[in-house]
Length: 84
Image 1 (spheres, one colour):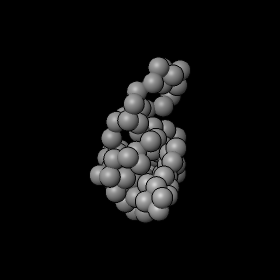
Image 2 (cartoon, helix red, strand yellow; image 1 turned 45 degrees about the horizontal axis):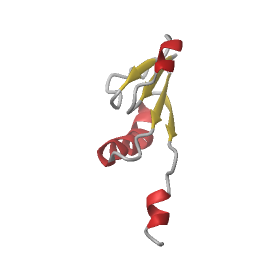
Image 3 (cartoon, one colour; image 1 turned 90 degrees about the vertical axis):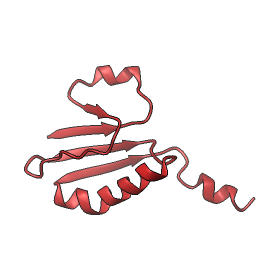
């Protein structure tokens, strides 16, 4: 099992998890023969990364044998603010 965690801001707690690969980009080198967990953390503010995440969710997770998690604080904040 491969665990890949994509992030925007590096945190000192990353050192506590040596079995996790911490990278600043969408993973491009997943092998479908190895099950993977991919975590996207706080990429909602970057529109390019968000588009890549959506594509990875739809296509990559199925074809690359990956389970995908998207972590965010305020997914609907921009939508709600546009009405006030």
